[in-house]
Length: 260
Image (cartoon, rainbow, N blue to C red):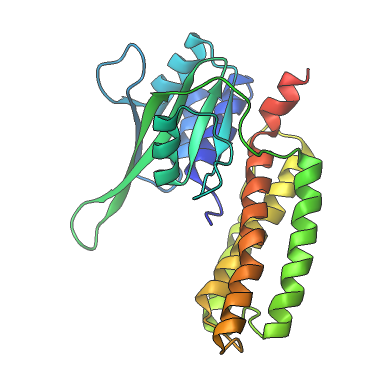
């Protein structure tokens, strides 16, 4: 599971821009992050790809009032509202941004370019029509926080019994990387988000890290087929709940705005 999906960064900083809390250049810089460049194609009124600053400004002029995140997985159209063509593209990318106020969504296409040893990442966001309807299966922040705590407790009990808790050099490297990011003062969400959304997203990201570590460190003591299946069965609902919590956190700005 992505700890910081590109759709989350675009939605969060796009919302801060719409609220007048950051400048267009600062929003674009935060969204691009460590990538080389982001462009948007298929934008109404444009004949070719344009930069993020222009694209966000155009969507605002078209009537966009906010941005939501979708993190779909097979059998779980989390955050999507259709039509099928958009849902299929979002499912392939495993993420998307859906605008509020205008019937458009953005799906990222990611590619590495450059010679070996000097590769960099370019992202093209495809602007596509979306159905204006409530997004699928998105919980409230309070629901997401409760579900995440319960799922993590249940999964921890199962994984401990099977002796597959994260350990060893891979686990240590992952935890060290997470701590290094935290110590650099990384902003979890853009300005304008409620503190509870920040708390829920931080917990969801930590859970995502633990899930990744559990998969990457092998089977641990789960040496039988039934024990390996039990581990996967324990992790699957936690992954689902963590994705739901991420979406709830990123979408909190729009939800609060629509509630007035």
